[in-house]
Length: 111
Image 1 (spheres, one colour):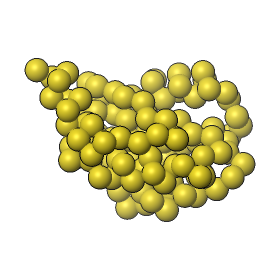
Image 2 (cartoon, one colour):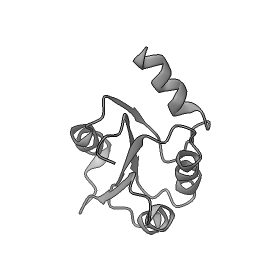
Image 3 (spheres, rainbow, N blue to C red):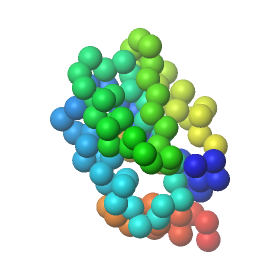
């Protein structure tokens, strides 16, 4: 989604046990004008495939992967450089958002 109002930046590494809950929390948002950039930091488990299966037909999601593990700082930097929306928020791969998180965030920051 090129005109997204919020970019959700989701770095992950070997998060196969938790990533589904994170993605599901985004899919359940009442605010839908977001883009989520998922950056897999060269996981050795099934993280990439799990995310791919969950967001396959959802154009709000961009799934990318580092060709080698670049570490936390480089992954965060890469995500920030890719953000284009007026607002951004990070979502950890072992965390999740309340269904109104993005709408409340946008309401607070845009007024």
